Image (cartoon, rainbow, N blue to C red; front, side, top):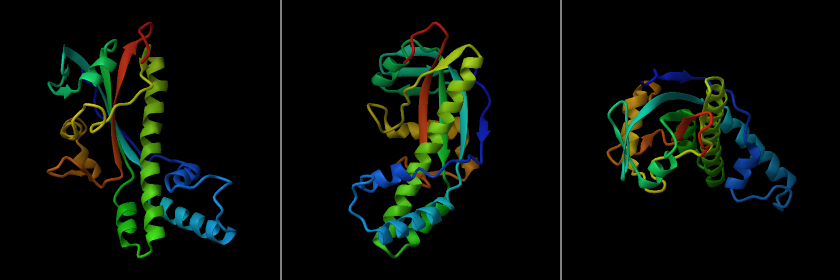
Length: 210
């Protein structure tokens, strides 16, 4: 039986400075950057981070049928992807999640006139969205153990492997993402773009952990 949608947010995250720096091509301690530039970089990071508004939604659904090309959920949707179906071989449920950091960070990035500042804003938004989905995944793993279940450590997202990007439509339907002020383009891209969606398998204790 499908569980109700669960809202999460606002999600409090530490600024992932190390990950942001790596995304921008830097190497901590070996960047060759001047102290003045690093100070400016960190200030821009803080300004961008202040605009991130992390929120998310999650839901758990049963797997009803298994096909060669995917799995059918209790809600009736077919999740396509042979690799994804193989990952769910020992699972009887799926965890469905979406996390976003909102529109303000994207709008502020687009308003920057400096290429450097625009790149930093973009990196901050991307890394914070990743941290938000990691937070939701971690919460799901911890709470599932209390129910005698295990959420897989692996996550699977549309557009990766053999899962088509059009699977984003299923996220919008199952999680009612328009209520998070998200929209879906005709090309199946989520707006604002600093949004991450993911599936994970769920099995009872004693099953094979993915």
